[in-house]
Length: 137
Image (cartoon, rainbow, N blue to C red; front, side, top):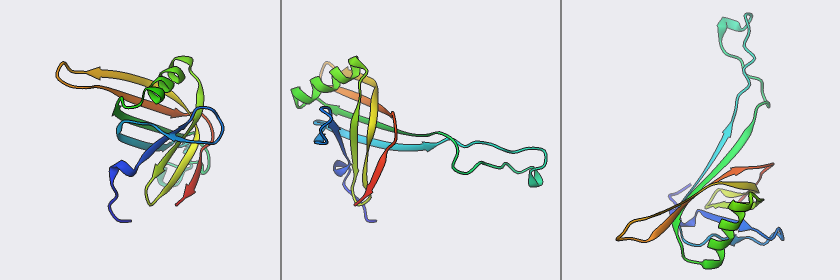
């Protein structure tokens, strides 16, 4: 895989639940992280006292983080409404030359910052809230 433009990493939202995803406007940076918790099954008889893990067990999670500026009043209002209502909606992350991850996420953090000589910006954090699907590009 060759180098990719960061702006091609897109975060999309399907607030209406219709399967139609709209790109979240104004994002300057995005990040997608996957985690899988291990289940340790080591006991006194483990060979050489090396840790043993149970395959296929544990908890899988995904986290999305984004930072941006306000550019679209409709999408800004929608994100605020979803956060304050605690709704879980379908989100999609498009990773260039890799694939698309789609599934339910909850906004777990929404932070606003601004300097006296700059623009108001926001930081957004989402946590997976169910099974995710991956489609290779």
